[in-house]
Length: 119
Length: 108
Image (cartoon, rainbow over all chains, first blue to last red; front, side, top):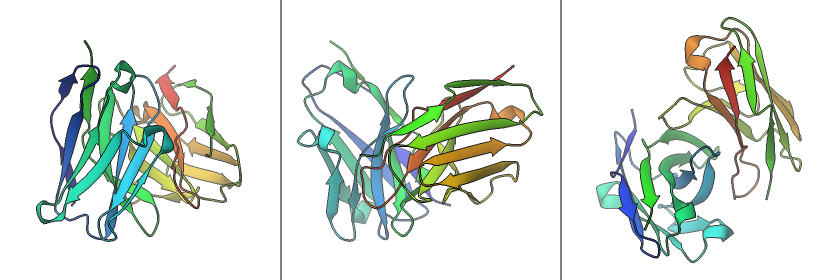
């Protein structure tokens, strides 16, 4: 059974950056994409982008272009999402999710990482 | 970008009763729609994909229908674990994948 384990909660100042990790156990990202989805308090999920490790292809939502970087260390089965120039509106729970490339479905999710941006 | 509009925002239902949730897409997405259930403090979990196929392990009380722009999730007999928030999500053609704003199913 695949498990995605994310790094712990973060508190950041406006203008700073945060990097969240997502480690896969019981499987790898090799034949899948890793997507990052965030959810602001009381809001629906919002897809931010994905990395396809096998092809080294990254897709970002235009809204986050220039501020988000998704990377992976395949040898460590770990993916990362870095978001820069943080604003208070970036306060949210950030999830990684495994995306099956044949179906584009999110079949496994991390437990979520709360990022709080506050001065 | 495909915009998904869910209705109602909140649905009050008694345990054992039926719940019907709707999701409308701003453009034709064929049957490339999934439904997720999110319990408090947890990540969303996949319920239905292809508009009508139950994900592995999901109970038969969940059913989905629709294609194109109109979709429905029906829960035939609500159990305690079903009082949660439900989201639809499209995965048609190309990203960005988008989610609806959710329907909260609460105890009447």
